[in-house]
Image (cartoon, rainbow, N blue to C red):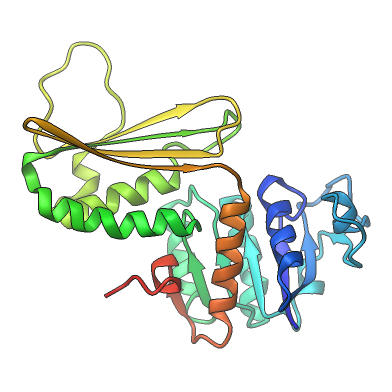
Amino acid sequence: MNRIVVTGAAGRMGSQIVSAVLDARDLKMGGATERKGHPSFGKDIGDLIGRGKVGVLLTDRLEAVLPGAQAMIDFTTPEGTIEHLGPAAENKVPAVIGTTGFSKDQLDEIRRLSERIPIVLAPNMSVGVNVLLKVLAVAAKALGDNYDVEIVEMHHRLKKDAPSGTAIRLAQVVAEALGRDLEKTARYERHGVMEERAAQEIGIQTLRGGDVVGDHTVIFAGPGERLEFIHRAHSRGNFARGAVLAARWLFGRPPGLYDMQDVLGLKQ
């Protein structure tokens, strides 16, 4: 049985990942960690997520549970992920990272550590979203510059980073397909009296409210017609299952930085 360590295991996303690991017949929980000072240390992670005892106690000692693990799955914070990757690299444990909001320096550190261990880094582990990324590249190339591109994302009121990592990745794929520099053409907000919309502009708008798991809409608005691609996530279990799929794919892979397009075989 392949052992999986889940960081942030008692959180909204972490608990879903733990459930997905427990549901997998070929995997077992090898460790469950949380940030220092968490009130549930020492309790069985199964009890904490309503699954009954599984024999794995919540801890903040990542170094103690990593040896012998086949993969670590991390959906925490940018700072937490970077802190966790160091011990993972030291123990040669592959990592699946679904955290978003990394700075350039943090991404550089992830790339550096991927020279020592295989890492799957993706802002969205959903199979549907990753199929959408593939479709968007084809659509953008076919539609070209005659169609304006707008991306709208909505998430729950507690989400801290904006725009979402998924929205940024959607925009990156469209920009790459159209041969544009996203840093120069992205438009993140509009207010007041403005000049008319720039032809090369890629709009990325953020909505926050309620308990929305994740909605993303990509709009291609052209002369006389509009084409919309919509993905709606109904539960976090969707992302958790994708993360477990990525962990399985990592077993035996050489060091390197991968994404869900690699995992799903969508790269040409």
